Length: 68
Image 1: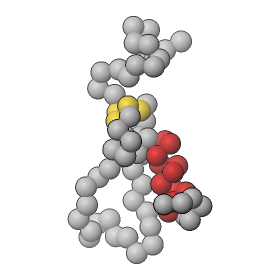
Image 2: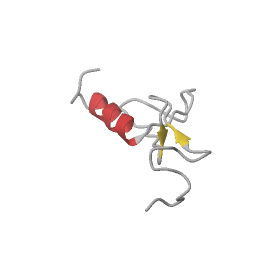
Image 3: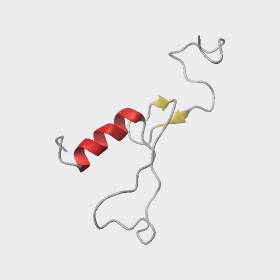
Image 4: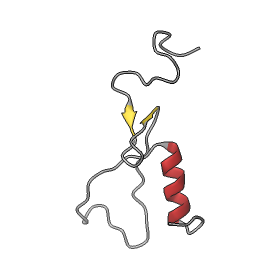
């Protein structure tokens, strides 16, 4: 049963999180700042958050297990 029965499972609740990569609403998002030679404290960047599917895709690309 959904947490809020007035909101159908396929409709995100107001204020739902959104993936910065695919633009879809998500129950959770992740931000991973990890790579060889990357210094997140010194390099100016915008924070981007990924849904689980985009996060997994980015991890496969980063480790060379998927095409870019």
